Image (cartoon, rainbow, N blue to C red; front, top):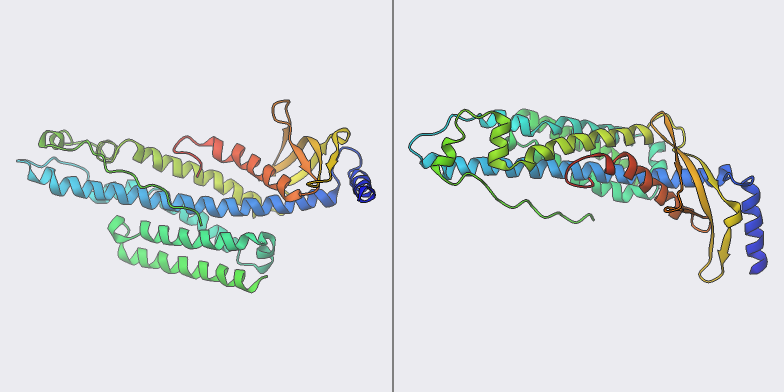
Length: 319
């Protein structure tokens, strides 16, 4: 066994040409990291679609409730924005997220692209089906989309999702979140009178709460960041993980359980057309797990996502 470990160590250090990881291992890490980012992209779009449906349905229901059960019982009704204008404001993220969803589905139509996804396809198909259901709910006539347009978009969703699902089958559960509680500032006729002449944003802020418009902006910002991840993973085909630099003097292995690692100095990665370098610091020294490259790939993918998606948007947390 010791002889085998020594051989593995010698081979690994040979293919790395010293401190730079060799092309075979770098390629493996890139493939695994890219697959992880595919999964993060599908899960992120699922989350955004769910947020749109939750945000819009809750605000629409709250507006209908206070108009029917509070303000309608007052001596005079305030002049307020129409429900159509309010829903148009609430629905701003729908075309952005819908187009991103369609682009991802179209990108996965070629069978060769499905091969790049690997085993992630099972998780991604679940994400896509949930996303389709949320988007269909968000574009329902009750939430402001005309019936004919709603039907057209729903058919397009089914058609594109059907092609991807067929490709997934022919090639080789996120928990639900707590719903927003019903809290309104409109409880009396004097409150209703205060709505008179107010603009759309002010009306939404008062009736649905100030987080509603913040949520909309957060969804739009996240969609922009996920668009960047889409352009990177479905883009020009160049590897995302470009180079890995490690300290060969720190190489170590253990027998039980078997581990073979070395401290990482830095790695270079691509986002769209830009190459970045992530350098380890004394407070965050990371290792290359030669015995489990998937572990290293997931760490890198999550590190990249944290920097370029999750930590970049103000709002209600990681999408």
